[in-house]
Image 1 (tube, rainbow, N blue to C red):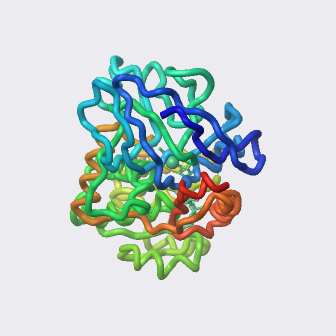
Image 2 (cartoon, rainbow, N blue to C red):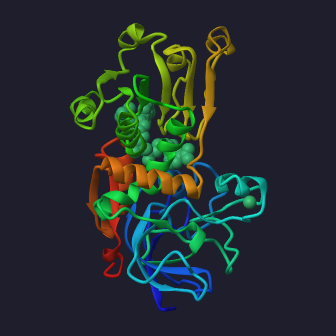
Length: 351
Ligand code: NAP
Ligand code: ZN
Ligand code: ZN
């Protein structure tokens, strides 16, 4: 069980990722050993390997949209057995005792959740290593059961992009007949469109990319508005119940707050590296809400997977091998992804 794990790592901020190998911990009684089949490439991976959020630890093995199959389980594992298809998202552990953990919101663990990569590993030395690798060992409470009816590679992005969009849509009670705008049609945005439609909402995509118009419709949008032309937004003033902002680069929040009806909410999930200003006057007179949202807890992630199973929702993916990772990240920054790159982890063993 302790053979070499093949991976791709960034060895310094902004350095291209290259082949790397290390050894995963020997499984403890509560651990599940997973051979990773596929791992999605999230824009958060790009932000972190380029150290755009600071505090990056290198070498860094990114990847937190992990799917694969169980190859061994510890003595005390109850929920999983060998050959089960499972997933791992952005977290691999938490204190399990604090108020947030008791509320099933482990992402807010007061002790600091152990993120899938770049966190201090409580079970070993050094940082945690993520899913751009062939194997991972995770305590069973942070392992997700995958639906049987969905394509495995296209399920991987649900583990971050899926839960990050499902959680705020669900928490803010998006439902049939509501008008929802999804800002930014990338990995998160395209999942947001599919999930909001499945919840019954009327969905408008707000994109700065003219060439995504047709795709947005194909993905389920009822309407598409290209935001490069500010006049195009004027007719949308005060029309939306909810706006999901998935944009990865600095942009003007105020421009979009005016599109909310009174009492409507705009939730930020995109995490640009630079701050942006807005005026209190774009919120106060209409009692609008501006909020943020971070992934989702493990219980809610399982709920999202079951929701996607019921509604047949997966990501639109482009499958790549290890040698294309750096190019894929560049293409993502240029907005050339349709709509999530997924790494075939078998290719890491040959790299
Ligand atoms: P992505 O696939 O690269 O999509 C980002 C989208 O933002 C692009 O497709 C583009 O959409 C839009 N965009 C990019 N640059 C822009 C610019 N200069 N001006 C206006 N729009 C621009 O990224 P992702 O993986 O979906 O991630 C999106 C963001 O969410 C990232 O910041 C990521 O770190 C963050 N994230 C947050 C969480 C959380 O828990 N809150 C979880 C995962 C990711 P259009 O071409 O349609 O305009
Ligand atoms: Zn992510
Ligand atoms: Zn906790």
